[in-house]
Length: 205
Image 1: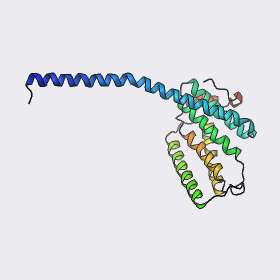
Image 2 (image 1 turned 60 degrees about the vertical axis):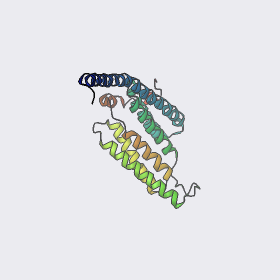
Image 3 (image 1 turned 45 degrees about the horizontal axis):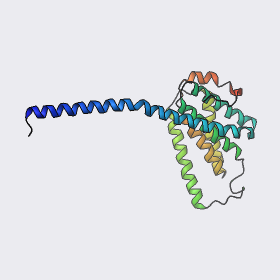
Image 4 (image 1 turned 135 degrees about the vertical axis):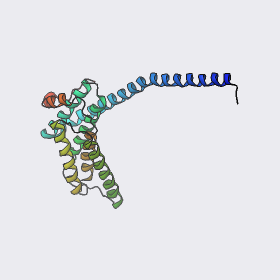
């Protein structure tokens, strides 16, 4: 057992090292947050560009939905909520692919579906439905425009799956799952701005 003086000195040194580590972690946190914000901004940019390419091919009603989501994303970016913007645009991208897929079953389109593939699709579909419902239930204060789009995507997903349109069903439910992740920072501003859908897809990033 070390002498009392030596033990006290050792304890003081250990305490100092502990404080230094805490200070170091505190200094690292802003960098980590900044890196994550940059990643979300990059995600928003990529989804936005894909949607901009897809939008001219969509029917007017679907194009309006896509533009509404882009308007909401623009407002989130302006508020610094990059993750919400990225998820809104991710949902918009999946929605665009879903409505572009058409209404014929995958079998009619000549895609041969094995039992194993159908089982894998069913498992993925059910998992995404579960995740969408879980995340959606965590947030109560959502603008009407987003709620309507989410509910429409969920209903369309169920209808497509029942009709054997598996690819379309997965895209619709992925759209819903993405929108369910949006935490609605500044929801009142979003509600007010949702009527500006005709503003287009141009987003300042």
